[in-house]
Image (cartoon, rainbow, N blue to C red; front, side, top):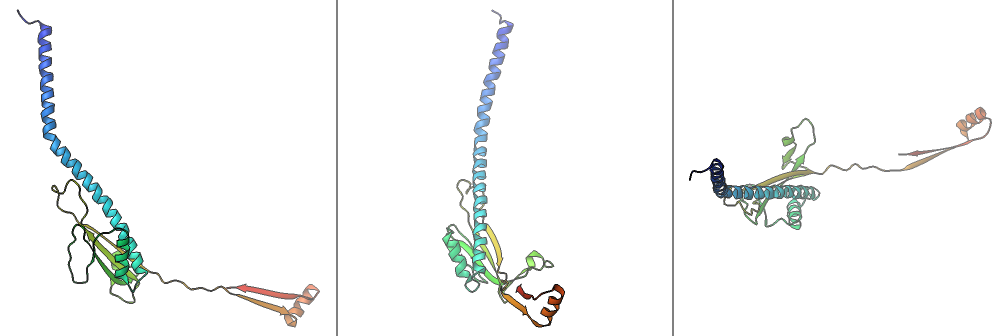
Length: 206
């Protein structure tokens, strides 16, 4: 019995649909590892970005605190970072090279002098070690937490820095002076002009 045209068309369509399902399954199986790796990378990159912003905020705060305690800058930085949850703080002295690690944050603290002269480049305004001190430069390095992509990407290092300076405070005083004019040439002259006796009092604030 010969196959009718509608039956032949239906068989071809069913065959094509079966092939599409098989192709979709194969493509899904092949692309799933890449999709999972990409998702893991995106999650870790987002986490590192947030952690870096938090580290920058803490370094800014530590630099400001140290600048206001210019005679005890290292203790001010360590205390500020530690009180805000920064783990394992190690101070790197001049001439040392300390590598950060998980749970170990490396900071360096340098006192110097900052000039706000607009003619100087931004990178030239802070001079390390120059006295009298009015500014502090703080750098921080740490290894961020990674959740999924630690085996896919090299270990990154978060590095931040900040400079804070203390501007000299302007001193001013408020006082008053009271001057009384009673009698004398000025009183006589004004009395003739105005037709009577006057008494002047002048108050001056500075």
